[in-house]
Length: 265
Image (cartoon, rainbow, N blue to C red; front, top):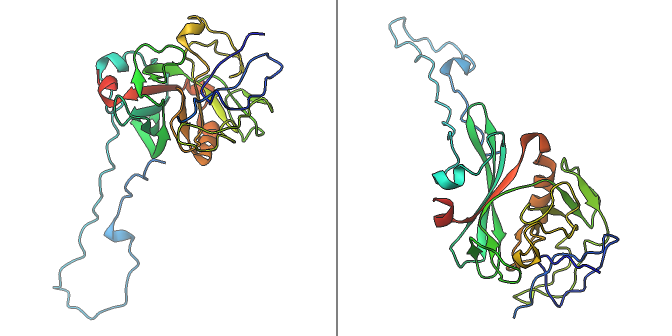
């Protein structure tokens, strides 16, 4: 049987799906803020007659606060990284690591509008235990830097309203503990496959590795369990549901991920 390794613990109890692949494993521890509204003195309700003379100063003219200008390009990304973002992409999940060797990140969902790129809220996240790498290999405990498609989703729980194709299966299950002794249960309640060394258009559980098994694979965005991952990106269950309900294949979503210095190249 061909096993498909992803990002959770080798001590984790894994359920093998009918596809003949295992779930993601971790090694043991061992909308945007609303645009400013136009405010006008003329919008205020007229008060009672105060008896002022006709020579009293007139009410001030209406004033309007300018709406904040949206960036034309994604902040923090250098020309090399920006060149990898497809021209037709209108949704970007930007994952910025706290440092090259850090296992913590910040995630922002950016959506392109006619006026520019509009950011969503900033979410806390975890990434690979040893940080980031430009050349990922199976078991190196790093998350790969780069720009990758987001084509397919799934999870142990029923579809929460995802726009991406969603594979609901009990095979998205894991037990055991993570790097910091935290329980891993529920980590795969919702997942989104990151198109690194995988075949887009298939279940996240699919074990096809176009670059070869030694280059790793099965790297997902999934529910955070409170500690570092093997290579995946993890965010809260609430934010996972929000992401699943927002990412739209028609907008060609991608994830742009890495430490800040790498993304700025």
